[in-house]
Image (cartoon, rainbow, N blue to C red; front, side):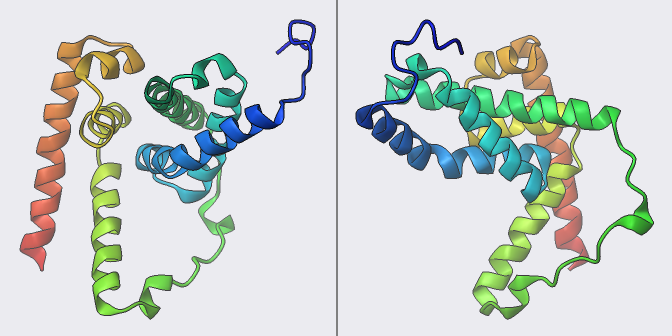
Length: 184
């Protein structure tokens, strides 16, 4: 952003408060959306930060709370999709160079919390089994509750294609989930 078009490039106290409130109100939702698309906490944290940096550079979008939250969802999903596209082109980590996995903190939780954590991990596993487009369409439609036309605009395809992605994703998701229930 050019500082020549903005008389004072540092935000006023009121603007900072608006920005802080915007981040507080949307942080969890944006992180969850991105995490569901990329499936990795560290990447989701970085992409969440990138999303808010992009959003806060567009102050004009923050004026209407409802519209800005919806707009932020599109920014977040596009940021995640772009990341996955770049990541698909570059994948050079050797298996031997990966660090040892950290101990699972859910082992120390109460039984109910362990079951919830296990269920969440399995839901994430089911999401990861979907293609990127299916997973993104499903998350945007069923979790973010965006209309098919908006999901289509984000994915750059027709609403009919979105409905197809969602139907395929639900079918695959249900099959994977049912296999788990039968195995238990």
